[in-house]
Image (cartoon, helix red, strand yellow):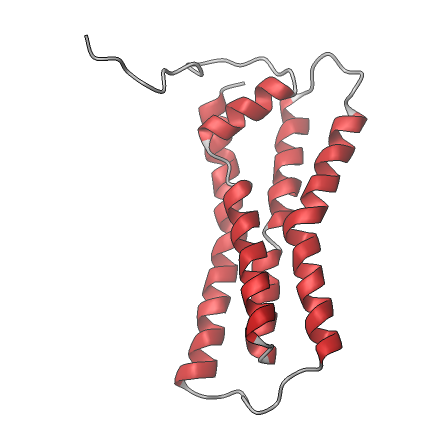
Length: 162
């Protein structure tokens, strides 16, 4: 399995999940602040803010960690895993982490307090950053899960000048 092709495939999936959230978030800010279509005097209760913030934290941080632990437990006795299994795992992992930006949209539309907005933003940034499928991360994951690598995966990071 070629890590660069796998990374390209996973990046397509990643951006298909992230771009709609970015567009919806931009529209929410546009409607709220530019067109002033939302009522900024009405704020949700503290319970609603806590629930939405907690769900964003679960989706951005906790659920991907638990899913990864479950996957490791599920494949613990295998010598090697299939490429389709790995790609499915990575898709689900990034899909759960990229649900946090959608909670940020909910937070903006509901006019939640700034503290909740900041926390949800941090959860969304963490989920988007940590689970970004770079080629280096894909190679690392493939080595962890004992997959056969093909292509040039051991590129030197630092080139020494002679």
